[in-house]
Image (tube, rainbow, N blue to C red; front, side, top):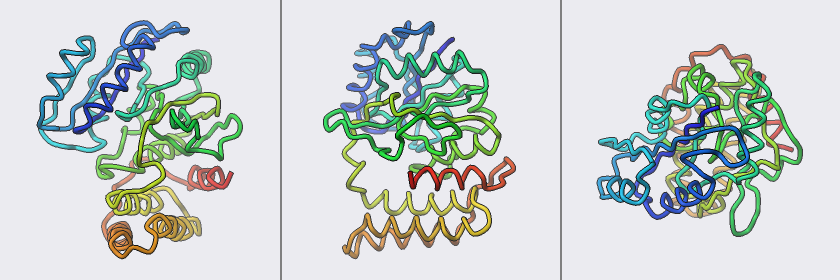
Length: 288
C-alpha cells in the first residue's frame, strides 16, 4: 500500500511546520510505522505570497511542495490529490496530524476490507484531549462526517470528484462524505482512531466561518437532502449559526449574509444521483 499525505496551507507556516514535525516522527514521508505502507507528503501552498515554500523545502527536503499563484481554498487539496501517486490519500488540515496507532490501525482496515472507501479520523485537541465529535461512541459505518484528517482511497476520491471547489472553506469535507455515501461507498469512523487537531477555532467561530459555513451548509442541504429533511436541515443549520454568533450584531450580520447566499445563489451541481439517505443518516448521527 502506498500512502500520499496531502496538506493545503495558506500563510500558517508555524502550524504547518509543527504538523510536518509530527508526521516526520511517524516516519512520513517513508515507511509508515506499524503498517506495511510507504508514503509521500505533498504540501500545496495556496498562494501565500511569502517565503513559506522555500522555508519548507529547506527544513523538510523530502516533502514535495506545490506552489499555487492564488488562494483556491479547498481546491488546493484537489490539486495535491491529482499529483499524488498513492492508492490511499491522507487529507490533512495544516494544523492536524494522525495519532500513530490510529494511522496504523486505519490503514490496516483499508488493506483488509476492499469495500471500505474512506475513514474519518476523530479530531481531538492535543491539550484538552476533548474530541470534537463527542457523539461518536462506537465504530460507525456509513458515516456522514469528515473533518481535519481523512483517509480516502484514491479511486473513491476521484469517483466523488474530490472536494467541491465552490465551497472554498468549510463543509467541503462533510459534503464529500455524503457524496461517497450517495455512490454507495462506505465511510467508517471509530472513536479509537484519532487525529490531533491543534486549532483555536473549534469552539469560537470566526466571522468568516459564520458567513461561509452557513452558506455552505445551506448548499449542502440543497445538494443532499430530500423531502422534509431539506427545510429542516436548513432551519436547523441557520439556528446553530445564530447560536454561535450570539447577540452581537456584526456576527449576526455574517450569518444573515450566509443564509442569503445559501438560499438565493445556485448550489454547486452534484453529478451523482442522490436519494437523501446519506443526509438522513448524517442528521441521525449528529444527534448521537
